[in-house]
Amino acid sequence: MPETVEDFVRIRDSLARTAGGGAACMALALLVYARDRDTGEKCITAIADAGRLDPSDDGYAGWKLRNRDLRLIEDQLEGRPWLAASYVKGTSPDTGYELGGGPLAFDVRLDPVTPYEPRDRAKVFIVSSGADSPRPLTVARDAEGIWKVAEWSSILVGVRPPAESCR
Image (tube, rainbow, N blue to C red; front, side, top):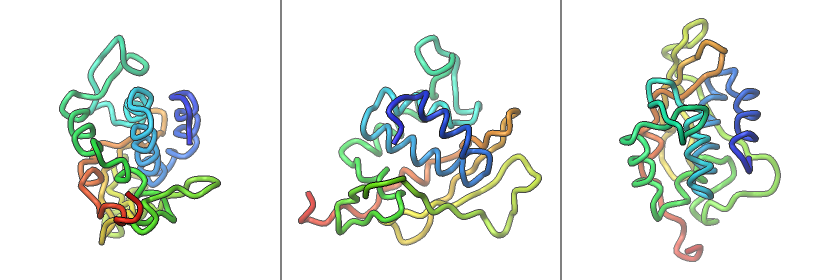
């Protein structure tokens, strides 16, 4: 789990060289957001496609998330911190979406109908342990070869709440 936006960017620069890695980085950024809103917002900004950003002096690297995107994230994660944790492999509603020890892993699948290579946009799906089917995201490759998330609203849709015994 990255502690700072700089830690996150190092992870992003390594993992987001593939479409699936870009999607996994978005799930990781949501996890950071659920723990620390300010750092998480900067991490989401760092993995968001440029079309989702506005110039800002107080954001990350001169950018910030568009207000409507930030409000959607705030609204969906408010009171539901387990939503972000549901994308980590090995979590479940039965354990309160508790993160296990060791490295975090995500189950990301490419859309089998529209392969992404050598295109610069792709649809990928990420598995949530609290949902019946994987959730889609759209990613786009930037000029540096980093796959950034262009559309993510489906991963913010609710998931099954933690078991009563975990609340």
